[in-house]
Amino acid sequence: MVRDPSREPEPPSVDEVLDALADDAARRIVAALTEPKTASELSEECDIPLSTTYRKLEKLTDASLLSESTDIRRDGQHTTRYSVSFDAVTVSVGDGDGGDSDRREFDVEFSRPERTRDERLADLWSELREET
Image (cartoon, rainbow, N blue to C red; front, side, top):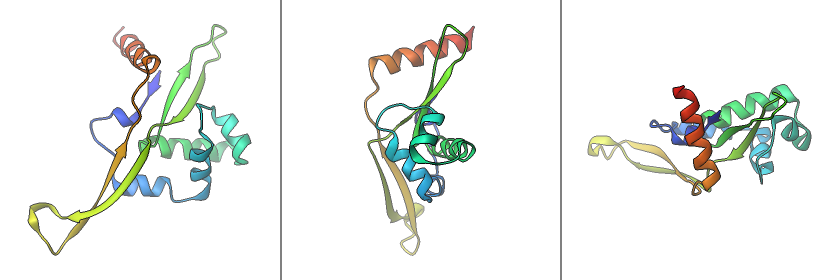
């Protein structure tokens, strides 16, 4: 199974993104993801309790900052790995809708890396499995 909120039609709100990055533990997790890692690996590397690590991973994934994928093993013990799903996140302030110059609104934009051939294949495989 592949869970990649960055491919969802509805982007996360500014509040979701900023809230997900609001604490040191979440930022340490993102910084540690130089390559895909499991929750256990991140918990150990970042010195964060495993239960807290899972909560942070969920929040970061929901905010489209991380994606998760599942490594399928022959022994049935599948492993979920997390990876960073952005190159840059930009928060900006602009004019509100309708030209109301008295009200300014925040916006969040993501710069995303190009998906690799393996990631595209995993997406295709996941979609196929969901249909059967």
